[in-house]
Length: 233
Length: 129
Image (tube, rainbow over the protein chains, first blue to last red):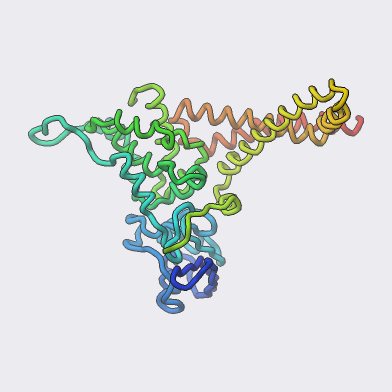
C-alpha cells in the first residue's frame, strides 16, 4: 500500500518558521511508523531528524505525536494509523530540530522528586527484603521508560511547564510506596507544593498516552490520597 | 537555537485525547457558562429594580426565559454536576481510576436520559405545547 506521511520540519539554521513536508512511500500494514521515518531518512530526505535507539518500545526515545496523539513511533503500526500519517514533535517541550525536542525540563522535574532509593538505616547483611505484596503496591510505576508521552499530553503541563508532570509523579510514586525507602515524607512534601500533584485535573490523557500502559492517573490519585490521609496504604 | 516553547489553544484542542479529554473541556466550558449565567442573573435582578437600568435588566431576563437558552444552561448544569461527581468519586477512591473508561460511559448513561426528559419538557413548553 502507498502511505503518505506528513512530517513537521524545522531546521533552526535555515528556517524562520516550522513547516510540514509530505513524503509518499510503499509500506505494509505491519510496518511501524519508525520504519517509515527510517525509510524517508535513508532513501528520500537525509536531513530529517528524529530520536531513536532500541526501536523496541524500551528506551522511550522515539516518542512523538502521531496523528495528533502521543505514541512511540516504534510501537505504532501502519495498520492502526491508516494510509495518511501526520507526525509532529511532542507538545509542550521546545523543538530543537524537526521531531527532536528539548527533554531537559522534563528530566529536571524527574530529578526534582529524588527518584532514587533513600534509606539511611545501616545496610543489612544480605539485602533489604520485601514481600511480594509490598512490591505489588508500586509494581505498575516501575514500568516507566521516561519517554515523556504522558507529561507532554497533559493540558496542565501545556499551560505551565513548572508543573512537575505525570512522569515525575509516577517516579515519586515508585519510591513513596516502596517499603525499603524512607523518604516518602520528603517526596510528598515536594509534590504538595504549588506546582505539584494538585495541578492534575484528572484529564486521563497521560494514562491513555502511556505506551507501557501504566495507570498514571491512578498513581497520581494514590499520591493525592497519601497527602490527604498521611497514610501509605 | 530552536523554537520557543509555545502551546497554542488550537494546538491543545487538536490533541486527540478522545472521551476523557472531551469531558475535561466540557467541564470547563459548562463551569464558565454557569459562572457567567449566575453573575448576569444577579446583575439582571439588580438592574430590573433600578429606574435607570430596568430595560437592560428586563432584556437580560428575556434571554434567560428563552427556551433555547434554557436547553444550553440545563446541559451545562447537569453535565457539570454529573461529571464533577465522577471526578469526586475517583478522587476519593483512587483504586476505581482503573475503570475510568467505564466511569465515563456510566456518566453519559446517567446524563442522557435525564437530559432527554428535560429537553422534551423544555421544547414542548417552548413550542407552546
